[in-house]
Image 1 (tube, one colour):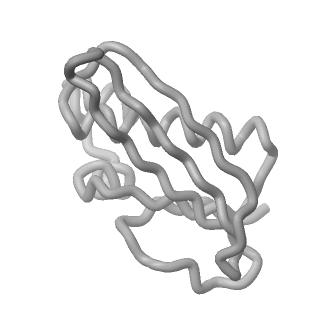
Image 2: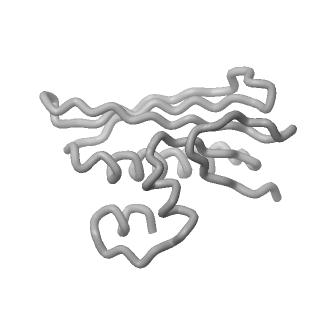
Length: 111
């Protein structure tokens, strides 16, 4: 079984691994968050993409964490292994690696 990693930016340089970019955009006027997810292979070729949305909006880091949660669930349903998740939120990436005991909405979501 191949491991899964969460990274802040960067390129996929390891052979045989997928790179999954996750991006969230915020629609305050519509009170929802749009998520874009794109999976590429180790040579940068498109594999699969998905868009989704969630409501209501909340703080940016929590929205990024929700995007990661939805993406991990989707990749699990696809039964993909060896996936590197790439996010724009350094706070979410750092939290994922440190596993702090955070009782805020953000901490509960990431846990």
